[in-house]
Structure formats: C-alpha cells, structure tokens
Image (tube, rainbow, N blue to C red):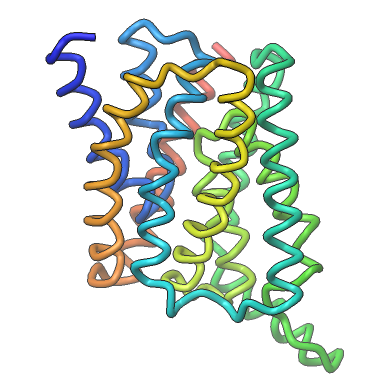
Length: 256
C-alpha cells in the first residue's frame, strides 16, 4: 500500500467520519472509493464498518449527557441490538450479498421518509400513549424496530445510520441531538461485535482499515461538535437529502 493510497483513505475517512456522526450514510463517500481501489463489495462493506467504529464511539462519549437513562429497558434494547448486529455480520461472511442488496433501496427510502416525518409521528405516538395512560420512550417495545435495523447494519451497513437515527428520532419525539448521540453509541457497540466476527473469520484488510480509521477519528470528533451548533432544521433537511441520494444511488446500482 503506497503513500498515495494511505493519503486517499485518510482523507476520505475524515469526510466519512463527519458524515457518519452528524447524519449517517458515510458509505455514500467511503464505499465507492473502496470499490475504486479494488476492494470486493463484501470486503469494502467490512472495511467501512470497522473503520467508522472508533469515530462513532468518540462522538457518543463527547456528548454523553444526551444519552437516555441507562435503565433496564435501555440495556435490553442495546443487548438485542448487539445480537442483531452479530447475526448480520455472520450472515455477511456466510452468504452472498447480492440477494440482500436488492432490498437496500427500499430500506433506505423507508428510513428517510420515517426520519423526515419523525417529529410529527413522534407527537402523534405520544398523544396516543397519553390517551392510554402510558408514556412513549426508548424501551423494550422498540425491539421490533431496532433488531432488524441492527441485523442489516451488521450485514451490509450502508445507510444504517439514517435508519437507526430514524428509529431513535421517533422514540425521542424528534429530538435530533438525543437521537443522534444514542444512534452513535448503539452503532459503535454493534460495530465492535461485528468487527470481532470479521476478525475471527479473517476477512479484514488491516493496513487499509487502519488508514481509513485514522481519518474517521478526526472526522468523528469534528462531527460531534458540528452536530451541537448546526440548527436542527438544517440538519433535518441535510439528513433527508443524504437519505434520498443514498436511495437513488443504490437503486441505480442494484436495480438497473
């Protein structure tokens, strides 16, 4: 691996780290570069996921006061999410990705629409919960949403940040900052488990992964601070735009 490739991977990593911590969808930048550098689609997915893991964890820790209470419900949710990511990572190693990639545009499109209307949907869900004498929050009932998203994240991962941000945005009533920190925290734990599985199976290209990871660490720290100062409506428009671009890009790649 020459110095030019190292510099390219590190530079792309910085941009990918910023995108991942603020809006998700870093694969729109990182994944095509890895393919262009000669990575197979499967190895590119593995490298992208592992390289972003430290950046997302640092972003979550930098704004940890916005995390939900670490109670039994949240612990159960995190445990289920980690299990889903582990299963997804095992499936990536064992099965061809072509079949699953055909539904990626549908998943991304649904997640983008869900996030775009998350604040309105959150108000509606909270109103219904209040009528029934219950409160809507991040709890064990969210498993039916987070488990399949985490499985997808461990398997392929492109755009999973937008999907997870959409789920947590509904649970937090459209509170972007809280949803974003929770997303980063859960994703970093999921990615750690997936990394262990990929490492045990011998499918990680470590030199390239470390070069990309170095850039994402810088980008992740920058992204965590940018997420605090950029107006929420600007972020909402940006996230929806990224989601739409990802949906179109993957639809063109896998359907046409």
